[in-house]
Amino acid sequence: SQVEELKALDQKHYLHPATSPKKHAEQGPKIIFSGGNGITVRDPNGKSYIDGVSMLWNVNLGHGRKELADAASEQMMKIAYSSSFAGYSNEPAIRLAEKLASLTPGNLNTVFYTSGGSESNDTAFKLARFYWQMQNQPKKKKIISLKQGYHGVTIAAGTATTLTGFHKFAGTHIGDVYHAKPHLTRCELGDKDDPDYKGCIRDIVEKEGPETVAAVILEPVQGSGGVYIPPEGYLKAVRQLCDEYHILFIADEVICGFGRTGRMFGVDHWGVIPDIMCVAKGITSGYVPLGGVLLNQAIHQTLVQYDQVLAHGFTYSGHPTACAVALKTLEILERDQVVAHVKRMEKELNAGLNYLEKKHRIVTKTRNIGLMGAFELYADPDNDTPFDPSLKAGLDVVEECFQRGLLLRALGAADGKNVVAIAPPLIIDKSEIGRMIDIIDDAIHAFETKIGI
Ligand code: PLP
Image (cartoon, rainbow, N blue to C red; front, top):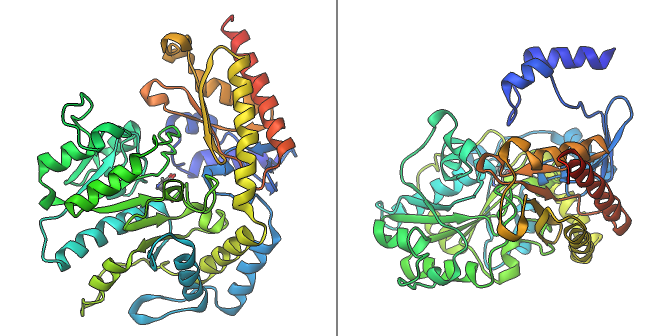
């Protein structure tokens, strides 16, 4: 059949990201997607699946939206691509820059366009260093990221990424990147007597010397590391620390941005305004690749003093078609009041997760902020006893969900954790959330039966 032919060609010619090459060479692709509509996608045999993680946390407005396709097509027929180098510009990129300035908190009013999250974070590191050079502080080069953080896979972003597998891959590291302990509210406020002080951001800054630190980067809510919501006060404490020591605060909003958490941006939950904000994914609802780095006016004012060429930029910086799709995405977000809808659905997802936690002893630590959620599986939740790693509990439950027509993602397996992430398209409704929860309920039951509980 044609599907078999495609699978064979894939196995032979296609090296997949974040996939075991050996397993792939032996088994070929797990699924070939051939269509999608709303919160569901389907395979060539017509089997449909609920997209419980919006693919890679990005297809926020769901699949098959004609308005987004039309926006791309209209722009392509005008001019699909034009350069942004050497002062060339285009209308969608300009209009999107203004729109982003209006949506972001504070005065993050200037954008540098990229093609995705990793490029955005690399760009943020370079611009942060460049800013300090322009401020006559060239020693301020170090970047501090958090453990469990995911910032992408280019060499600099991959160095800031701390997830074991991604960080270690191919030994590709730059210097001057330090990994701090995350989410320790008290020590962030500077209490050296706190046993958690060692290794926290403040400890690293004080050891390295603030005059050497360019920026702290973090995800307002950590995503790929396992959906960790910071404790109240944490982001504010990081903001204060950065102010105290003249360090730039970079918020990686690649997942959180554009409504995922029930606010336009993750930082909005805590009223914190970063100096630099990195965006990607949801900016186009994943329909075309686009990323951006938003800079505050203090940084922008400094950079505009530079009278030579800014020697940074991608062929696809300011891609007109990508920017047109982003403009349409943001228009829909506002027109359909999607962020308010997410806030309402937050309660539904929360209720569903609570139901799973009550019903299944092995389900614990359920959490969600907006439509960014997770649950964890433990052999004995009361004593924090993890499952034997050989059971691959998280992966197994995700596989059981897959068999039942629901796509989810297992996180943390490399660190012996069994976190299952749920992040459906933001347009999901109450009954669809109920359907997801029913499938997960069945899937967990199947896993329990298999291991004899
Ligand atoms: N930052 C965060 C928080 C992410 O979740 C991701 C991707 O999952 C990235 C950066 C990297 O983005 P990209 O894969 O578009 O390079």
